[in-house]
Length: 99
Image (tube, rainbow, N blue to C red):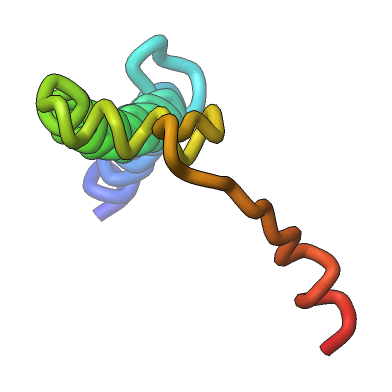
């Protein structure tokens, strides 16, 4: 009976040391894997965000390649006008502040 207890204690100690080593001290420990998994998740979200931005930019480029799209962009961003037109700029920031 004492031999069995001696062997059981040895196995318990060996398994405990092994688990402590694998969880905390090993270069491929659980905590390092958790940190790397978090980084992978963050990078995956960033990748999805940038892919959506690329799609938006490609759509905007496709629109700007047409004459009507280019004219609309020039009118909205640079306040360009045709010869027979007048432009009136309305500042909507002051209207929002009054409400």
